[in-house]
Length: 326
Image (tube, rainbow, N blue to C red; front, side):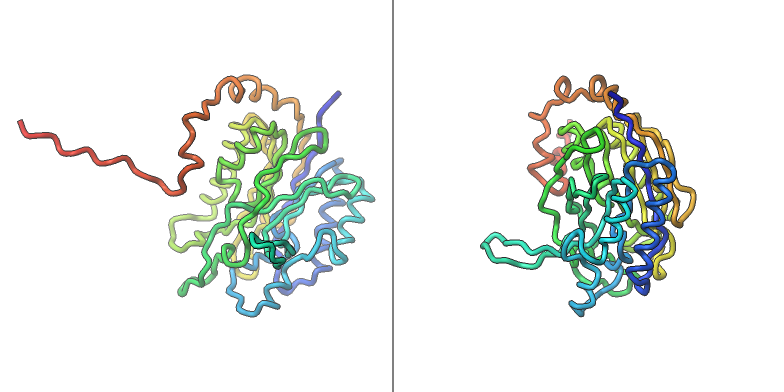
């Protein structure tokens, strides 16, 4: 039985904070329809696909901030997306700002904000959910910067781990933006036999932490490199999709791509606007790496990997004492 799934990366151009939800929804649905016309079965949309990248601004008014969040998924505001996708028999990955009601460690019910993504199958059912683990930026407002990066302020670190799930003939995983740069998450999925990684991102075209050391070209290169290297080292397909362009004055890189389990780019967007890339992903091609070079059962030596989970920051080896004079 063939395990070929036609995947689409639906890159989006910028969303303005002045755009209505209908305007954004109409664009997303048009991308779904364009993907369906090319025979896609599964479409990957960006991180925070329903809004502008609001962590670039400092919000002190809670109501203004919460306007960017979804209290449930689906909900009446996004139901047209679910309905049209089901009509098209099209699955999708969607990144969004999630407003959850959960109990904390004391058992108290609280409202918690997450940077989240879901995967929906061709029948309109949510089959996977992920909350971003590697939040970049800062908690506090930083004076002197034109744009902030306040994900640590507006979101709580994801609490679901890296849960692989089945769908579209294979084993799927999800990451969001900065997660794609951290190999730990990829390897957690690799150890669950992932065949297809779904990723959405909103990455600044400048160094969001200040300074002039990173250009849009370099950041796009690094974005693609991270996906290529990690897809290869875990022998998985990956679809990594941007929201791109000049968004409310803040530049976002493009470079959305589909990468094979051999690490090669199979398709990549050329613009900074709404654009669709499509590729037939043969999930059986993952076997080459999984059974040979990256046969984990044969070659991994976890008894030597303790540092990866036992420490956070780098700890340098001690400085050797000066040699005694002869």
